[in-house]
Length: 203
Picture 1 (cartoon, rainbow, N blue to C red):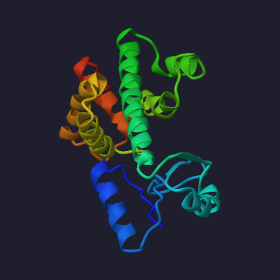
Picture 2: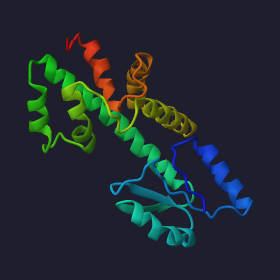
Picture 3: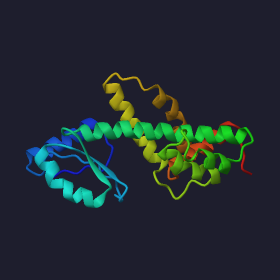
Picture 4: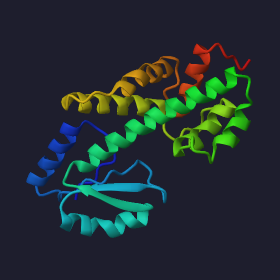
């Protein structure tokens, strides 16, 4: 049985899966498995019914839930969509927190007010605390991972002739974080890039 734990190029993943099948080394299953599964992990399983039934008990022990999303390869597609949203939410959170700071608001107060408001998101709740403190470690997901994912998503979207204007808007911000030596910091470090653009210094 083939388990994928990366968000790699779609064509390459499909090619590897098909190769393993021809060698009798895999069944048609592609759950998206993070490098370190936790009880909060949601597995996106795609493949044939027999393989999904075989894998489900194990995956349910490793994560919070298992979502069956369609035929072999569909898990990758759903993951691309999810990673696009997370990448956008991350920069949107940073932009909002920088605007709050430039407006003279207390970032900690803004975080507290927005935490359970209509403006919140899981990404805001996860990454705004990094931004309040201006400390972007230990990382929950590194800047380098975001850059890699955006490259993969961009290529996939281009193969479908699908416009992704927000992806295009955020890529330079992640690229700037990489260029400034933030590759191994949490993705929340894009906040530091936007702070610099806004002329904010933490001294």
